[in-house]
Each structure stands twice: as structure tokens, then as C-alpha cells.
Length: 241
Image (tube, rainbow, N blue to C red; front, side):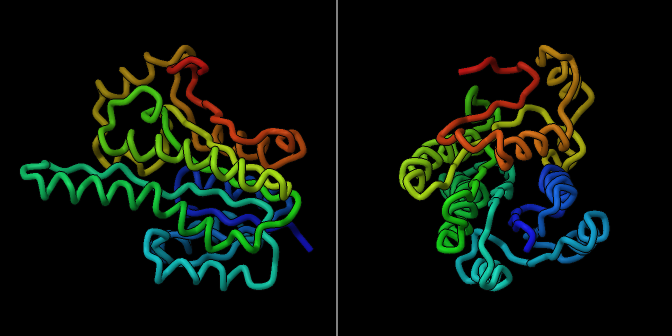
């Protein structure tokens, strides 16, 4: 039976590119997202090895649908990619609290609930848990988004410590500026694009495929002895730390 990968936020951008790459490696892929139309389009692009589950991974009542789709199979790769930058005017303390909670739920709670739901189904030994963080977690500038993504780092260390004896790895990929995704949702300006590209030592933006290649490495034989690490894929915008 083929290996199985579960990818949250799998309908667009990094998630979709990674799903396509893993399907090409022979995996069966379950992509998870909130929008059935987007997921359906992604399935057509990925191919017959992919199936979709419509679910908001930050909602405890919806996450069990993913475990149900996995069924009796073992999960070889869990790629927690779902997340979002949520803007707001923060006019009052209530507004501020609501936005921080929403950002935390989108980026942290979603990963925690999906991982814990699938934890009994992870292949032992051999499963790989991969979380998507951000350059913002290391240099700031994103307010609650920076804080939420940084929280994933500490939690990944916990996962690596807890699951290492069972032969399961847990790592974080921290992308820099990546185009061809919905992350900026119309917020990107020409000057913002240029400043981000110029901040890279390579003077170019990243692509979803660049992150997918990092997943390929962590999920494959080369990543077998890598756990509890923050893998920076940012073109040198933030140097190794």
C-alpha cells in the first residue's frame, strides 16, 4: 500500500505544491481545507492519488472528519501548513483580543488539533510531522502572526521530545517571502514586493515549490535523523540561527 500524507491548507500555494510533489513521489495524499471548490480544483491538478476533506482545523468539531478519512491506515507525513495573517484595526481592547485569538487559532490551534487527532495513526517508527512557521517568527514585524508562528517552534520541540522514542520526527520549516500563494490576499504593493526581494541575499522571491522541496527532504530518507529543528528557507533574508 502507498505511503500516506495529510496536508492542511492543501488547496493553494505551499500546501498544493507539496501535495503535488508527494503524489509524484508515490504517496496517497489527503488535502484538508475550508473551501470545497478550491480543494476540488487542487484535486484535479494533483491527480488521482489525492482526496480532499473539507474542514476548519481550528474547529474541534470538524477535525475528526480528517481522522475518519484516514481510517485504518497509518500516516507517514503530517504537514501542518494551514494558517493565515489576519489584519484588523484593533480600535478597542476587545478588537485586539479578538484578532490575537483568531490568529492563534488559525496558526497554532489548527496544527495542535489536527496533530493530536492523528497522533494515534502516525506510523511508528517512521512518521514525519512538519509544521510551517515563518520568517516573522524570527525577526518580528507581524504582531500576533509573529507570536503565533514562534509558538509553533516551542511546541515542535515538545513533539520531537515526546515522539522521538517512538521513531517519529517533528520539525518546522520557516519560509521567507514566497509568491504564488494567497498569503497576502491583495495586501502586497509594488514597493513591498521590491523590499522583500531586495532583503534576500539571492535577490529573488521564493516559490511554493521551494518549500515543497524542503518537505521532500524531511519526509524522505535524508530527513530520518533530523528532528526538533527549525529549517529556514528564506533566501538568506534571515541568516541561520
